[in-house]
Amino acid sequence: NKTAVITGGNSGIGYATAADFLAKGAKVLITGRKPAAVQQAVAALGKDTDSFIADQGKPEEAEKLAEYVRDRYGKIDILFVNAGIVGFTAFADVTEADFDNIMNINLKGAFFTVQHLLPLINEGGTIILLSSVNAISGMPGTSVYSASKAGLNSLGRTLSRELAARKIRVNIVNPGPVDTPILEKAGIPKEAVNTDQLAKTLPIGRIGQP
Picture (cartoon, rainbow, N blue to C red):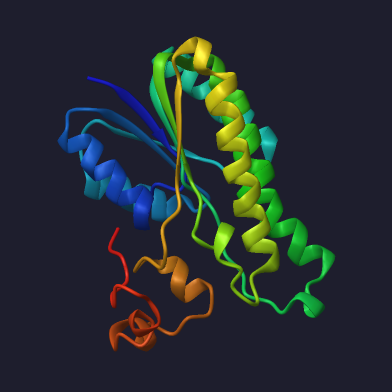
């Protein structure tokens, strides 16, 4: 009987989380940038699923999302900030546009999404931030992406103390590689995932599933 908002909920970890929350009896609102993909996800997830088209990289759209949530639900119990992008570029080749694109979505957008929705989160509610092992692993070629996720981890630690008086828990999830569309968008060929080429680089010998 709880209400959850999941950014980037039309695929990958966000979609899997929406399905899990729905199975446990929650109402779920998912967001995404592409209307067709979002509507397809809503149709597959079924009843008790709502949607809102928003680009997390634009704080003004987070504000519109908050207005929609306020009008439709009043209050929510769970905010899962899952939307994000990844980019692999050697440090020397990173452009200002590359930097801004990743930071705007992964850190700035996440920051203001939480800020705009925070007044709507019930006392005792939950904020979940999807970060990455790259925040701490120092993987070559991910300087901007890793910095954006490290910033997200820092934000989560700060908020967990700042919001303690409202009994709002703030948790950060730092997964390793997970078999989602973001891998291919990052330039990792599908065959590298399917043939366990990527898994062989990991201590546990497998990649995660959403």
